[in-house]
Image (cartoon, rainbow, N blue to C red; front, top):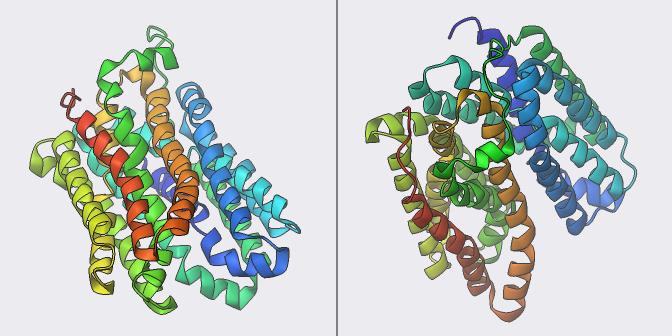
Length: 396
């Protein structure tokens, strides 16, 4: 990796923090309930606000990347929104303070992945994009792992407020490293046209990618972040230790899947073909969970690992979609695609709660979860079928 190594390392740190902040509320839930009176509904709203703020920021982030580059876009937003949100969280005295903090954190994290993707798209060969994107997501996803057992240990040692103050300092340090070390790609020449969302929407090749973008990451994220634990406990009788092990295994499978995505695309002759395989296996795993939700804890753990591994096809989708973007639309284009991905995750997390609530009121636990898996399965199948209509990548 050339002169970008130090800058890209700082961007990876920023993306690790983004992954951490989207997942750490689950660990803090008992403490926030006891000390702030935050209910499960409060925390669900706070988590949803993170995703909504993140998604709504994607279009302005894309414009900023095209106009000012990733150094200022990522560095300033991470400092103001990321570190600022962590400070508000550390000082929280009521549940609504958490809503404000998570909204700020969503804003601060919004360019963390798109900044390095912009550099990959502008400065590296097109054929390398999928591999680089997968490696970045793989390393960044370690932040999700740090938001589990390691965070519990730190909170037990230091207390949750001191931990958040420390996270604010780490986030500010990461922002400073981005501002100091990242070198922006060369500005486009004056002969390049100005990009717009309307131009992106006119790219017909993207139309049949967007539905799968909206559900692929959303399924794995919602099950890993919200539903794996309750399913293991209520249907399979797993205790807290087993739940921790099984969900950790799923999280690690998601990391490994991200690293494998790029080599899989090369092995199969393109990102589209690899993504079709990844999604087909996801559909198979979810179908088993739907049709036989009470197979037993060992089967449940295996299905979660399979779903985590093959649910990590986001870099493949991004590589495929990016191939249709002209140079002057790279910033706006990748953030537009990411808006569908992260927005879909937020919508499905919100929608899955009333779906499960209704199913739980009508059926025993196993059948209620079967209805929930069907809720995730149907849009995934629709996105998969529409994806067949998308042409192969234009430039590798």
